[in-house]
Length: 102
Image (cartoon, helix red, strand yellow):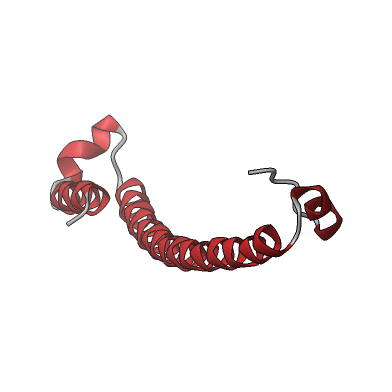
């Protein structure tokens, strides 16, 4: 269980336990509506947490795919740059968009 799920589980157990003794707790302002609202809020938090976890997983996958594509870009750039470096004098590289003087 995640930290969030654990906290919500404890909160739900507390709320359910308090529901059994509302007659004792009503004088403190505790009523069924308050407890039901707390349980519903906990369920919402767990749902949102799971949604965030899914989004994190999707973002991680996208980042991985992007890194793979970036490696491809760098390799192709290096290959094309080498063509220019091996076949043209340094003074002509800029006309091909190559500003790197190394």
